[in-house]
Image 1 (cartoon, rainbow, N blue to C red):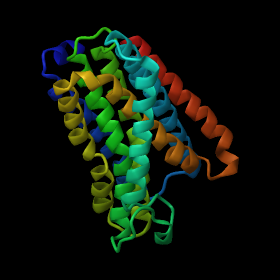
Image 2: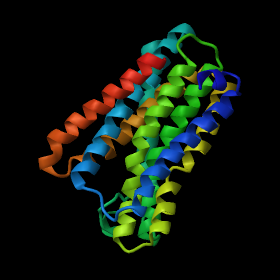
Image 3: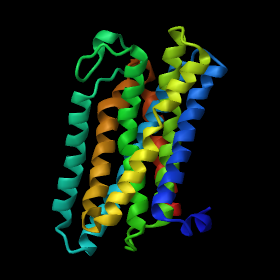
Amino acid sequence: MIDFLVQLDPVLQALLATLFTWGVTAAGAALVFFTSAVNRRFMDAMLGFAAGVMIAASFWSLLAPGIEMAEQLGHVAWLTAVIGFMGGGIFMRLADRLLPHLHPDLGLDKSEGIKTTWQRSTLLVLAITLHNIPEGLAVGVAFGAVAADLPSATLGGALALAIGIGIQNFPEGTAVAMPLRREGMSRRRSFLMGQASGAVEPLAAVIGALFVMRMQGILPYALCFAAGAMIFVVVEELIPESQRKNENIDLVTMATMSGFTIMMMLDVSLG
């Protein structure tokens, strides 16, 4: 696979990688064709696993290469990391505050962002879409960084990031489709709404790759920015959602550590 990807333009690499991650989101949403409910312990464990993957990806695939790249380019590495990382978090905080969205299993009165009269299904999709923007951006920046031909940016590392994000997209597709199905929406429409939440990733990836390829001086900042945005999603959304049931916390903790371990293994072995 790596030999095939090497021959492609970095933007096309990023597009193909995020078409894969979108496909995994659709696979998670496709569970509605086989069942109308997923065991709560299982879903909490999957969300915890996704959090572990994203934490590991944020450091191994984004923050650490960004710091190393900053040093190679003669930047003040710690300052670059702080500006980029906090910038990503602040960007997501603003998006979270402004974009109308609703998290699964909550009533319409608990919707966040600017108040609207949009349907519950639309708000649920927007909640996961908000998560997927930094994920797609991270993949695009990672593949765009490879084009800079710096030692700290490798095709294997970018591929590992895409695989890790793909793995954690499975429960996200399920988390949108299942509540819609339980509320009476048809299986087909529940699936379509669930997979739609991942459609933003290819677009965000292409934008990220094009941006850093044309402005290589901001690469370290972009990598750290993507890391900060992903950590915001983990801490603000995934971990709280996975730990709503006290009796599942130990299971979720081990699932989070398992996700971190698998993503770390992927990045170290492929990167």
